[in-house]
Image (cartoon, rainbow, N blue to C red; front, top):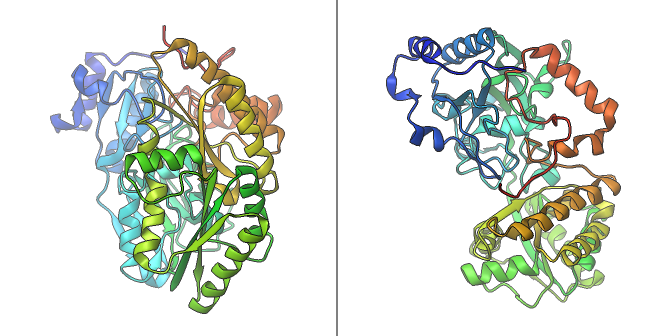
Length: 474
């Protein structure tokens, strides 16, 4: 596909659509700040526009479609898969300024939100009226709901409550041709025609741009309880995870941290974690107070029977918050080891968690990489992170091979490339490995049907011929 560059004529038309000069950025220093996300690599856009209304988005997209200019919607750049990177130049559309609407309609158990609203603000607004928006990605304090919708984000509560797509009732979407459509609605039941809502959520901006969303809320559980189980062997911890999940208990959260994570957190901000342990599991249950009390005790008993060296149940809210604070500090803590972090989220069936742990240990030793493991172990959504230094080309080549083998292991065990981070451009080379040529072709045909000029976030999900994961420079 040959794209038109953003020249003076196009810039003039954009300024007519968005007359506020402060929201049309052309300086190289501004463009550079939109050339990266939380993943790997940099790609400079030709222009950045910060729309505030659906009408502005629609007019910009219509112009881009008519002129065959690639357009890249983005929120707060927290993507870990390269989702918003402008790999073909074009226009970066900063949707974070569309944050005007955050309306909670308690009687209908819904929230109506603009795409630039921070996910944490939705949590807070819902909880003020005794409700809950369950998806809780770790970046919720800085990530926009539009980005969460595009990537179908998850979070620790995904084990019990599911991911973003499970709470989206309806959308307002700008199509690649610049038309504005609505999908779904405000009702729980809606089986009218194709489920375009589910198609758009998780499509990573390749099929349209979300300009408003109707989200389902649920009553907030009245009680929670948390424990920490300490293990001398990470594979044994995986067995405990499986046993808890088949016991009749469905935790709200079940997280794991391996020894490298534990040591990194303790070096970063001491929390009293057991640095001698090979793994710890954090389990949280919620619901009716009496049920919660019994379930947390039973979960503790199961962990002890499987081989936990020690189990600690948080007795106060302060103790509970301290445990979860330690889990949230993993990402900032591990990058102190080395400056480059490659974060993956390969996901396997729950029964295969112990085997995946064993495979990750083998990969770490085979390629001699700093591989640390944490994540949402209860739903098999692990986060193997490799900590490296991108200036060390030899090390990065080993990292490339390790990442590829992590994906191969997950798929061989019946898993998937991504549980919540999306595909972006980082995982595109591995799509056929999971879907097969025919499965990937079906997705391509959907994309081509809706976006025949391929202007919507090109370079994502679908690999170019011969494309492979490259983490080395030069």
